[in-house]
Image 1 (cartoon, protein in one colour):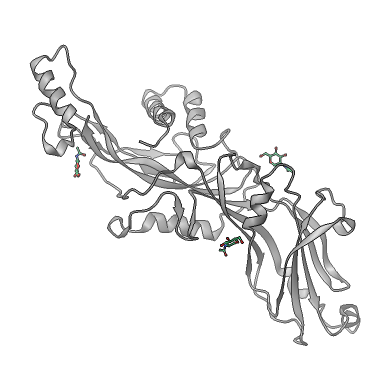
Image 2 (spheres, rainbow, N blue to C red):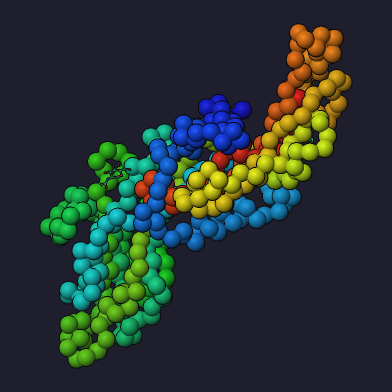
Length: 370
Ligand SMILES: *[C@@H]1O[C@H](CO)[C@@H](O)[C@H](O)[C@H]1NC(C)=O
Ligand SMILES: *[C@@H]1O[C@H](CO)[C@@H](O)[C@H](O)[C@H]1NC(C)=O
Ligand SMILES: *[C@@H]1O[C@H](CO)[C@@H](O)[C@H](O)[C@H]1NC(C)=O
């Protein structure tokens, strides 16, 4: 099985200590590590969950099991790229200029996305910048005006309020709009890949200006609405990054959510119902969704003769035969998970970014005697 043995051991320990009510901290840190986290996140200024992540999360969860095509855990089908982690980075930059037009420039902001949380072996497969406005705006005064958006790559980090004007910077893209939409999307995959080399991420400069046949200062002095008016609906920018963590990724497996009765009744090996609530382990303030999930577990006897329903291996069948002859010398085969399915978890990481991550082998679907 693909899962790190340490993860399984950690999960088993965590569950066991829940049952025993013992100290969780060591088990917790083992579990967090296998989830790719250095410490338990404690979001300080969490950004709202981006709707695109909610949508993907809901889609993965609400499709009826039967309609669900076998899902490749290593692809984000919504974007058609390889990946098992989707992060949305909040912008940590600052305004260089906003408000009253300076010439034709309405807005100038340094954008900074700290990608250092990506593990070294993660493969970045997609990065998309979103520039958001609180509403779509039409041409403010309709006189052939255009909004012009420019994005530069800065070549000197100007995080502390210094104007990048004098600094060298490279134009990445330039686009004109007759109308500002609520959300503008730009493909930054190449830039973001390059940012991951040490010292290469110096941020971006976003500029929005208006081009008009009339000077905005003259317009304003005649009491007309400032041409920058609708740009004040600027909200924020964020960077959506898809990556592939090779350790935690395995090729396609059919997905089926199993609902099992509580562990009563038959003593034979079978899946038993176990609901793991993230608030019971004190994780409710950084795991956004789900609040818990049906993990199930395997329990029961593997008696002689083993029947086909017990999904045994030839080895297990022979072992029960030997066990029936020599119960003291040879144990019964063990009742263990033989089919598991994945879940997706939406959470805040240690830098308050929102992450949607796919985890294999989180739910026991079938058990067998092995
Ligand atoms: C980026 O984040 C890391 C921690 O994840 C931090 O150590 C580093 O200082 C941050 N870099 C900047 C420029 O903010
Ligand atoms: C983004 O740009 C990269 C590199 O130019 C390209 O390979 C990729 O297909 C683009 N993605 C989208 C969604 O257009
Ligand atoms: C064995 O596998 C079958 C499907 O292959 C499944 O229906 C059955 O529940 C499994 N047995 C156990 C004990 O999980």
